Every structure is written in structure tokens, then in C-alpha cells.
Length: 258
Image (tube, rainbow, N blue to C red; front, side, top):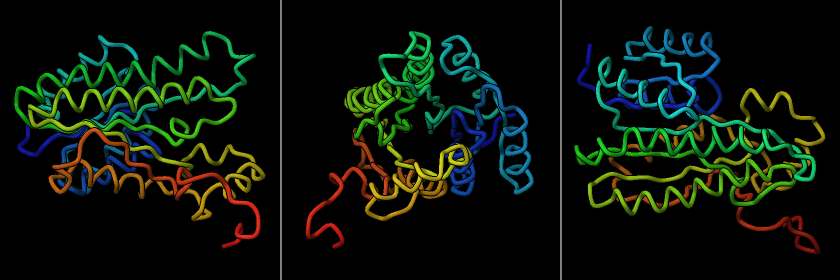
């Protein structure tokens, strides 16, 4: 049964930044459509948590890289909850390996989810947003799309492409009152951080002026603001949330400690 509250679709919404975003948007009054691909238990746990707090929330399984699955998911969301007014393209994968050793499958898997997934989801909702003259598409980029890292030619390429795609999309949809923008997180303490070597984490801190990793909730708060009417004059931009990493190269010399 459709409800009267605006619907936010969060892809890859069952954990990490996606989970935090689902919670934040629910707090802001949205009905939440949680997309997942393989983590049904985590998605259902989040749905139950949201419902226990009085929020409208449902789970939808779909591979965002599959256009037909995305289209079917969006039709189901509209019939059950209502039209999507906020889309957060958060689903993403990594297949890190040096380029000389990268197999075509590692390239294709990342592009299919990270880039084709954004295309498929934006394609599925943008026309209807424009027809209703309201809606926001927030695509999750990455600091790696701005400051590429070794071993991530596939991932960095996908995230850089999202930035360009979003800027162009924003110009096309602006006349209809529909916004599109990118939020690019830096190093963030998600579940995947537990798999990172302690020395690698220590090294990463030397690259971040604020000397810490971000929290999923901090990224989600930015996404929530950008989805709100308070950000109604913001479109076509990339909001970097990385503790200052993208502000410049690591300092050296007599002023390095300043």
C-alpha cells in the first residue's frame, strides 16, 4: 500500500554508508527502499529496525548492473511505496589489482556495478522525476575518483566517470527542477575497514589532514542534507567528504608539522 511520505531508494543499502544513509533519510521523514544484491539478512535486519522505529521501509533484491532487474525493482517500489523522489546510488564493488595483472573480468565487474549501475538506476527514475518536476539523484563517488590510487585503475575510472556523468546529467535535468550531484567519501570506517592491514591504515592517516577516517554516519549526514530542500540550489557538483585529503599533497619540509 502506498504511503504519503516521499520515497528514497538507497542502492547497496544494507550496510556501511548505505545503511547509515537509510537510517539518516528515515530520520528525515522518508520512506526507505533498501536495495541489496546478496546480503538479504542484513537488509531485512535494517528494514525491521526501521519499522520498529515507526518508519516505512521495504527491501528489494536487484543487481543494479542488470537493467531489467532495476526497472522491475523501481516499478515494484512505486506500486508498494510510491514514486522515488530521492535516489542514492551507493552500490559499489572493488577488484583491486595492479593494471598489468588485471583480468578483463575485474575491469568489467567494477564497471558493471559502479558505473552501469548508476546509469541503470538514474535512467529508471529520472524521466519520472522530470515529469513530476521534483527529485534528487545522489551518486556516491570516491576520493579515488579524484586522487587515484595504485591498484585501482578500474575503481578509480568508474568513480571518475560518475563525476562527469553526474555533472552532465545535472545540466539536462535542471530545467525540470530535478537535481543531480556526487558525494565523494574518502577513507571511511565501514565493515570493509576491518579487512585493511593496520600498517596501511596508519599510512593512510598521514595523507589526511584531520588524521582520522570518516564515519558512515558523517557521510550519511551530508547525503541527507543534499537530499533536502535546504540544498535546493545545489546541483551538478561533487561534495568531497575526506578529512581534507583532496586539498593537496602531503606536506614535507620545515612546515610539515604545522
